[in-house]
Image (cartoon, rainbow, N blue to C red; front, side, top):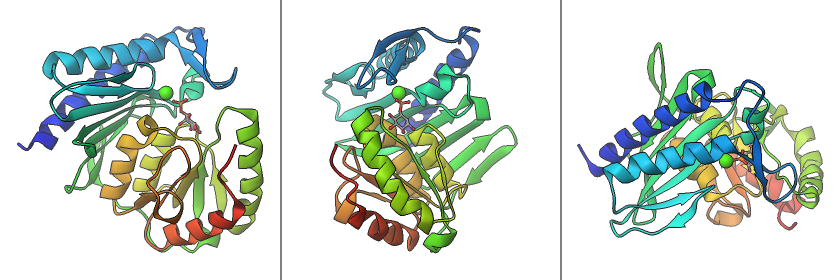
Length: 269
Ligand code: IPD
Ligand code: CA
């Protein structure tokens, strides 16, 4: 087995355990909000913290020299050249409201490149995985399926997923951009979890995705899964995807969405 396969195996087992814990231990009356971040609606629950702690503990027990970047725990250095990029709950607001679209996202980077990633979506009974150069898969109780993005979907037939930040000024700009997108596409979906959106794209359940403000932990695993399913994941004008802007779609659709977004001035705020 290659290093990437080994890292994926550890990521899958850890994400599954964290996902199960998040389902089993979610308080019946909802998790406690223990912190707010960029705005009062940008919440951290006790379960985000517990899940990240579990993930870091499990990985560290198996690989003590690796580095970590976690949404809740920040940067922790290591000397092995492997870094784990972790979102313990992507879609925390869905988790808070007991909506099913939230996920545990874990990616492993070697020397700065994502080589393995898993997005575990416990309430859907689905896990998505990818190893760099070896394709992307969806695993369910009924089996495993190789994933392929939809390609060359004309924009006016494209179902486009997007998301919004938590800060009011950012949202006002995102709403303005959306008024330029919505009349030109089949429709918009706002599921509430960036990595679930990216997996939906990889599986052909949506045709494209874009969002301003997503962080490394939101896109590390899902971005690899989209690429391994044949899609492009980039920013504007060939920039790397990231907080400034992330656009993801299959060939043909990507270029069309990019060219629709660019003049809408999606950056800023
Ligand atoms: C959020 C989700 C949401 C996206 C936000 C993210 P979080 O992540 O991915 O879909 O629109 O930009 O911050 O806060 O639930 O981990
Ligand atoms: Ca999160």
